[in-house]
Length: 209
Length: 91
Image (cartoon, rainbow over all chains, first blue to last red; front, side, top):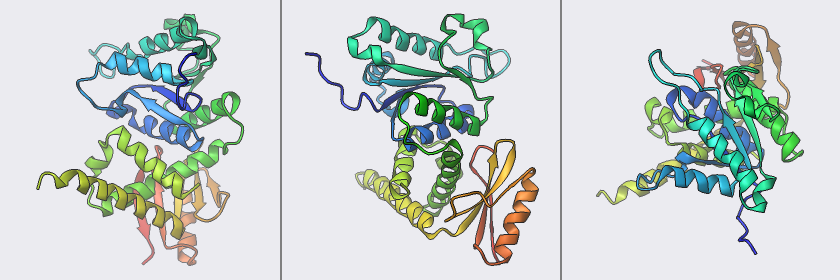
């Protein structure tokens, strides 16, 4: 009998960039997932430098029934830089788990996010036919995409996208003002580790169910 | 003294969480937030947006009017990504 994975049906593996430029999209993405009652799992949630990154990612993919892959940064950030291939690689691992992994993983579902509609087809046509939604780098649109996908795929008893976006704005202002009152600088807030930011999202949602 | 650092961080985190929820419970703000390609005026404590305006300036004016009439004490004007652009408090 295979070992049951705790929280498998709630875990959402998030495959996206963790750079400064992506933070305005990552933060509302995390909020929307948690506000819909799910648990985000990210490679950056544990910062043990001794831990092999690919091992950590493999473990998260195996433990998550759902996944969200944002391929919107399949391009160099600056002229002269090379594009990042981590996201498409991890998407491939996730797809592979579904087809070649244990039986439980055949129930996996994923959402692929992109910046522009149909752009991925030029470079990754193998995934045509999957749930791929464009957010145009607009955080509100990203929240709408994630919420609607959760509604279609995971659960129906969730708030509207507009309500989640409003709650995110309220949370962020409460958080930023409270953190500043406690002596945090804007840099402390902007460069806060993702795991710490998730702690504050959960605390706020607990107080504002 | 170094041993106190983790507990100080834990204390600060708890204090922020407490402050956040006490702020939210007070329902004292009006928020100007992006709403698709428009701007919405959201009054804390009310379910629906008070007004949807085509421009941010229009939404801020509408929020200022509410503060002037004593509906709430402060306006939080957000950037398009949801973070704070500035706070406006009633005099």
